[in-house]
Amino acid sequence: MGQTELMYDIPSYLVSGGLFLLMITAMWLGIVTGKRLQRNENEESKSQANAVQGSLLGLLALLLGFTFSLSLGRYDERASQVVNEANAIGTAWLRTDLVAEPAQSEVKDLFRLYAQLRLTASTVPSIEAGTRDRLIAQAEGMFDQIWEIAAQEAQRNPSPVTMGFAASLNDMIDALATRDAAIDRHVPELVLFLLFGTFILLGAVIGFASAISNVRPGVPVYAMMTLIVILVFLIIDLDRPRRGLIEVDQTKLITTVQQIRE
Image (cartoon, rainbow, N blue to C red; front, side, top):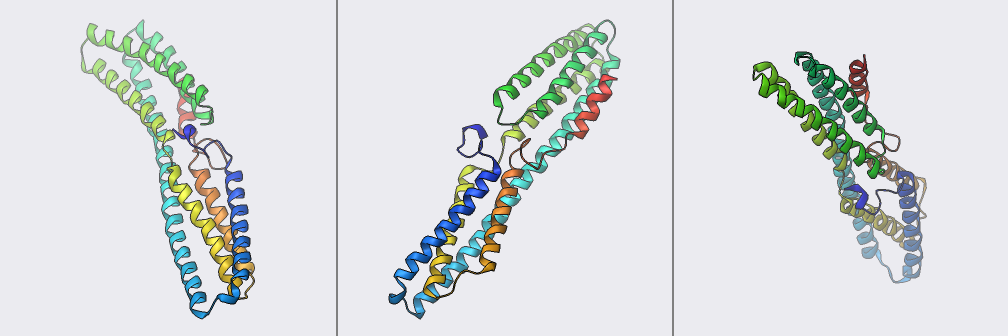
């Protein structure tokens, strides 16, 4: 669960801004260290520092690509699960018309409450774990009541119609579990720490290489650091559902709930 991790509750802009400050600090420390050791450096050591700098840039590109792809994949999975659950709820709702009265009216009322609970849960930020868990428990309790009625109808009238309704309910509860599991899956924090550590080390190496070469870090260096911070912000924002700038589209679920209300 994301709530047990160190950085999950920290806003994305603070994480990325802190990373930028750490990179600048590391570069400054690298410059200070490089100036102190400058007299003892020769061409071979300068070439070595430049080679390490290039290697770190390559490693950084690999880690950035891997992490961004991972976070984007998790985002796409969450988006598809919203559509899957909305479709499952919509299908089960249509099949309530096949339930005989007086059970049909009761099932439809429970369905409206269930769908509203699922929509409300989708608007609760993931960091509010208690509220989200309470809404999920209420929805599951509502589903239990619907399932009990469906089971009674299947026992009373075992037909393809009642079996089909029960199957749609099974798909609906599976969609609930799959979607909530997708919300809790994100980029492992260890991967982010490795990425951040590489950034900071790169800043130190850039500063050291610049100092021993008597070259002051220019605009391209700061532009690269800024771009890295922006990418980190996007990675974290994509990886945190229902908070930040990038959110999963809930339109399909909203439309389904509106249709059920009518």
